[in-house]
Image (cartoon, rainbow, N blue to C red; front, side, top):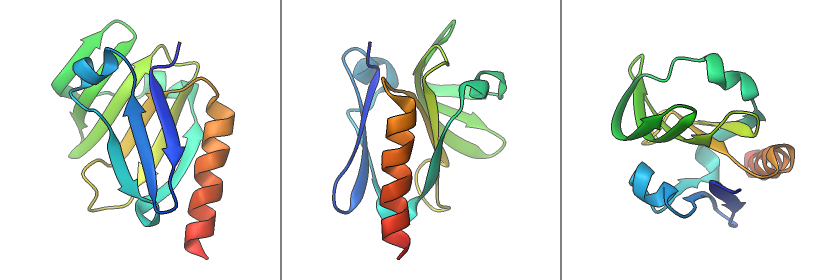
Length: 122
């Protein structure tokens, strides 16, 4: 079940929570200029990383949705379990330091993001 859709426009990365995830995360979507996307990784091990303080959002078991603050960073999470989690690193100055989301096809999504950011760097 998709918790998040990720796609690329000619100039932006768009992250769109699906269904009730919009309510739980208090976000309809996040748009980041491609120039400010540093890359993405498929990282089920993010399960073991500190999540920080939820403000605002939802944290219930393996379900995290919303904004989490840890070590002076603001991160967006929208995961249901961790096996399909991807981590998107953003440039300093963006609203979030990183975006961590569950997607249906993590390897394909990571490749899509990394190809788009590589094109942007040229």
